[in-house]
Image (cartoon, rainbow, N blue to C red; front, side, top):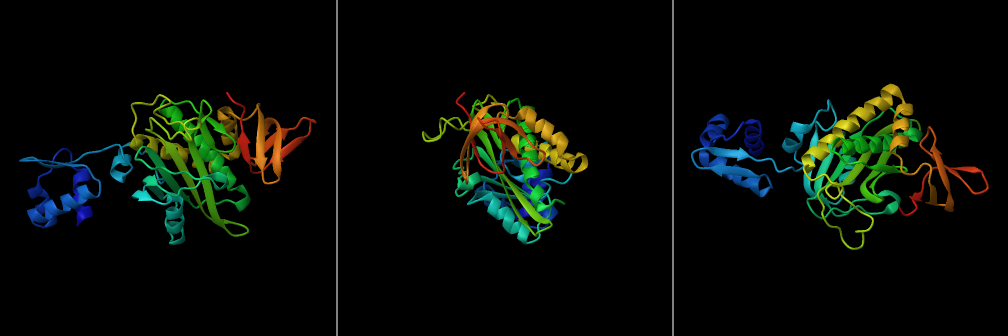
Length: 319
């Protein structure tokens, strides 16, 4: 019943009276008030005005009704699971995948306290200023090609940021940077058999409204706000990322990786620079000369030989 009250508020233009809600749902005015009170305790901003009724107020948050006005997708994000706080949106999405959730489900949270990054790092969002987003996909891909989704996601996010006026660059394979500082991280996890992918969960962590960062990361982290995007909210950013991600996903399967590869290179802040790469086998230094068609980084060493990097942590020179 509470969801039905919420649905009426979401689809109403302006205020809707308690009497109108009670009549439509066949419940008492007192019951309507109790459901409104419960919704406000869950975090929904509902304005009540005497003789007018109730109005649901968008807050620029991550609930479905706040994102939908900006969403242009056909299938991505049309099923949405929102949590005020969770340990990890990726873990939630993986659990939903195991229960049979649909391709295109997204999990969003205001805060996560045990989020994961690449190479065992953490991505913790302790305030309602960022976006913790995980996308469940069931792509027709071989497991060996799943990394292409990560690269396509990086391109999609870079284009989404450009849509809101922020120029970012991609550090191989998928960190989004502004002026050398990290703005967004992407983590892809999957379940597969030898010859097919069962599901892929792409986690995207974005710093949006933060004006300050803890001292420990202040020199390496930034946000869309600090990059100059002052007139946006998290609803717009999340929807913009989803719009672009659906486009890039469909382009990957309709046109192949070559066109996405070209865009990735245009956004790259890695290719053409002297870098250090920490891998499981040690540290390698050289010039990043290209990314091949499988998404692997090609490093030209001092002796002129080229080495392929499958996985590693790229350290760029100071800007």
